[in-house]
Length: 315
Image 1: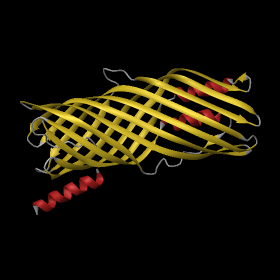
Image 2 (image 1 turned 90 degrees about the vertical axis):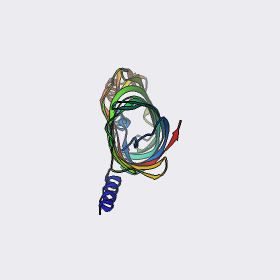
Image 3 (image 1 turned 120 degrees about the vertical axis):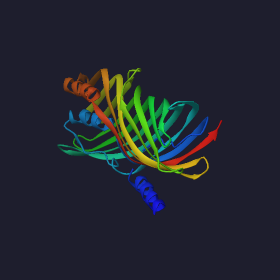
């Protein structure tokens, strides 16, 4: 009966619940990790694109594929150095790399026409983790940590307007940023094989202030003339994240894990240079909206299931 109850607990956790799958580490070890994220993403660049286009009285529909499932590759490692000084059991240092790619399509509407738009989107972010493992009891661990996160986004879009005026356009947006974050993990061993855990990013930027670069460039050629929009400046972000999950030992040193992740990266540009040109003239309203589009605070939203494996190499 006890075994059946434990099995139900683990199964429930795996089916309903994040992210740094840990489990107890023995001695000095290098923990290798590989995983895939199945979920949805909304980028802050979608809203910034919306603000830019509405100046021309063009209303963008939401980007399609926002809620469809895609895979984020997640690869990394953590090195654990055994300390065994009271409740301080080890210190750890790790690197985790994530990559996301998706093609988007959406329509826009203006007074006498229809815009058909598509874009290729890429998101890369990597985390360097430095922390300690505190073990107040034999089956419960607390892992406070400092996370140095690096972020890159790119969008390359192509637009076609069917109507009056008809137009052809291209859009390019790029962001990069680095931020220091504080986080904490919790682990609870149900038995020698099954572990429930949570991973949280709860404060930032910390120690290292968020900094980066934002650039946006868009041009259009139409039977009514030529337009060009530009913005370039700083880029800042911080993260809010909660992950809940479970891992289970399937053979010595090898664990499988499944987690439920939800994360917001709140971002905006700082002090950008922005302008909009229509034909031979500076478009003052367009310039203002380019500035607003860059500096407005918006979220990069991630949510879904992550599944994968970890393997320990004793050193």
